[in-house]
Length: 324
Image (cartoon, rainbow, N blue to C red; front, top):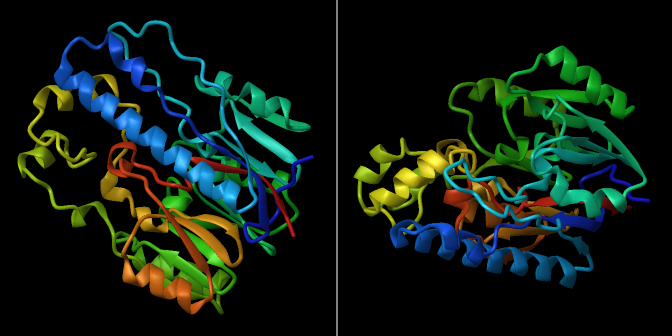
């Protein structure tokens, strides 16, 4: 039986997502579109495999979704690959909560390995990407299009721990990470920075909070027009002048890309245990120095296309089981 009660317990079993293989894009006739997508696919596959290898080296069992590759895409919006399992499921205690989506069929092998499953049809606010379970509380972020009351009831039905609302919209693992007892690495919230600091002070009174730089603005854009063409939402290095590729992504892959203006990839951290983490390759001194100060061992892995996928190493990882 899988159990998951505390972010800082030892990670024993997890899921790592999958992307479409390189040959999936063979149907695209224009090489200006096909070749960048195949490059992204190949490099993303390599990075996911590197993450799996690192997890296994640290003693973590890794499960992968079983790809059900569409036979033909045609002129429709291209289906999203099962990259981010935590976007629509989570394990709380010994219960896997799963919101049915168009990606669900890729995870049948995962569901078969779980004893207790709660299926929901309309509450994707309850997922791994939107909460952290700690020893003494569960912290969750604001839902997009659902009432607080509905989400409150759901979280409180899953645990006896106090459930805390953090006043932030969207995926919580893109905002902050309580990486080890006593340390939070966080993004700034320019709209409600004072409110965010008050939240930390109230619910994490004895914890050090450090604020990481590393936003999309620190990328050296090769051509300024790229920002205008894409409304600053995503970026692929080397394709800044490829207008055909930009149009294809914005039209056919609009459900793949997010908004990197809202993302700080250095806070998207895989916590293996309270003294071991995995991060995307970084030289961020604020992050690395704070982790070293708290005696946390850092393992770095590549994730080359974070600014395309608008996600990072924790996004592609779903904890199924942790043990004390």
